[in-house]
Image (cartoon, rainbow, N blue to C red; front, side, top):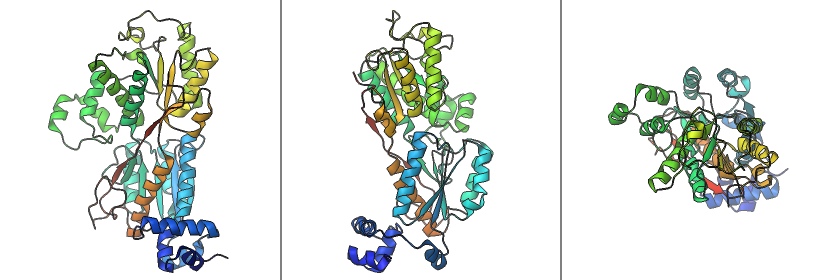
Length: 419
């Protein structure tokens, strides 16, 4: 059986250095850690978790909760976290919550969670009681939350670049010639609502703690909306509107009104059903030449989607793939007549025809950042500490004040949104 001493000898380091590297401790230089991990992989080294638990009092098991394992992005994230955890000497237990606060509470109180050294909670429900319970749980158990809107500053959080990514996606569609963009996956909000909401938000989507000017400018309804913790959908719609607003300021006539935004479920069926309904209700496909002014947005003034759209921004890739299927089934040429872009960058988007262009989020980055934060908490022996005051943007500083990290993104140009 391969031992830790074998790994240390292969990597040319001490046994202690090899142990620290495999545990993911920050005291080891990155180049040395890579050498140790490569040696462990070459030799097929597997940490003895039982022995480690006896010596350290830890299980070296990490819990993870996701909304839906039957969707491609959460499934890919679970795989990336499992791989990264293994490289650091941990095992992963994954559970799904279906965005239910009841499921979340059951998960947090379960025996399987309590044997974990720490837990990564992805896309928690927005229920206020559930959020408070999660903060309470984090007081005694290391926790990192992905897209936990309203939890920044209370627990360690990692955020998807919702606003920035959506803005880039819609700006790309406009640059490709789109003038009547359908945003799929959110209810309509007026430009006035979105601008007021923007005053209350920081760049990462969290609320400005105290801004008297913003509070005076914003009506009570918008502040209530903000206090309800605007989620990924609202933030992506905001980014889409900001791209349209910027284009208009540059003299480009791009439509935005109730007919340019349509709710839909964030899965394959939701995208397919919503797009099929739009096409059926219009009595014609979007291939039909449009005779309205591009910027009027009048076709959707009654609340029904404007059938003359020339591009679709779907707020999630699964939804985009469903919408793409409906468009192609109706004989709509993509991207010649209607461009489609999604959000997530799932691998499956590369196998549609045409390939699905998307705002790509790297699940491996989420895994690295999330585990950096969580293992720092585990090694500090607490979830929210007062030993140090770390930079709020850093994922590698010692555990102390809760930290927030915003992920990077890139536009994946695969064909569906390029002319």
